Image (cartoon, rainbow, N blue to C red; front, side, top):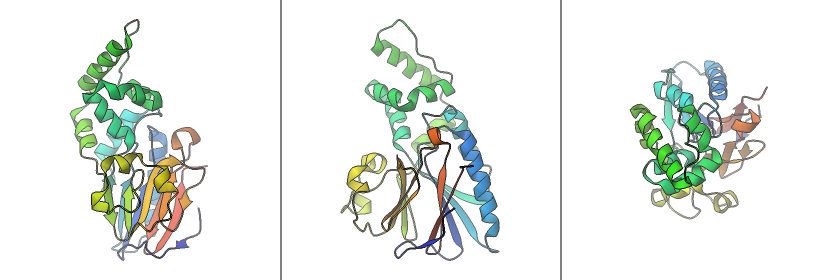
Length: 249
């Protein structure tokens, strides 16, 4: 845990504590461990205080339990906590693949195979690649629960809370929030990461892995590569302070 850092533009309404959780990528074990830590942390809320959790996207792929992660988030068994669910590039690509075979090869190479396996989808062997993709697409359409599809389709591109904006990948510097392109919000990297621009709010994001959570004047990055490192990270925001918690032992 890191000592609180004072910030100038980031602020939240009095009585509200926000937890923003980074990329889960099919690691149900780490999601459950993180939520245990968040519930324990929230015990220190004063009477009447509110807790809100923002999930920054990439619930799927790479890890082995993508379906179980969605089952858990859709059921949302923590009524004490308000919850916001954002779209990541992995969710966006799965949805594209359902309608467009051309999205398949890229998705499968960066983790989509594990998502298919979690739903019981197996690619046929000894058939041409295009035919194999079509068979996988057909199977996924058939087994994807309607509640999962509805959840994926209603994921938000971003959410604003006080002096923060929460988004999966980042923002295009110099572009007003209402004019940001959805594809930038789930895919952008270098142009955003290397910018020292004032975005008008502190941007809280995942998408790009770093060894430690990043705490900068204009942005907070909390993707610590949970699927491979075992370290799922979250930032805790309250008033004008920020601190971090994670699942590392």
